[in-house]
Image (cartoon, rainbow, N blue to C red; front, side, top):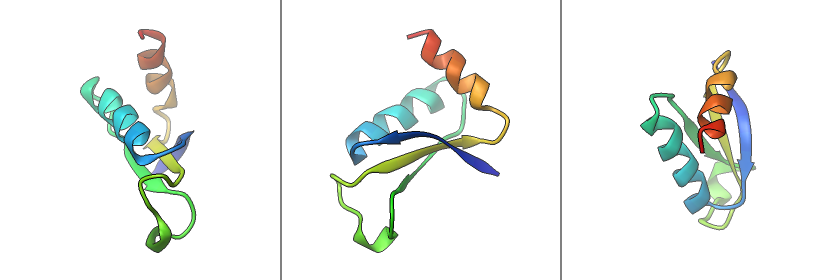
Length: 64
């Protein structure tokens, strides 16, 4: 199961966050807000991490 971790302003930012977390070994997904058929590069996106692993994402961010 996946849980929301962060809301991001656009696709580029979402992909950067996803790459950062996955580079540290934490799986991540990005999904557009609202209807998936209406998304664009400037839509808001949600960053999801596995349930119970939010603390790992927090630790990765602390290292920055």
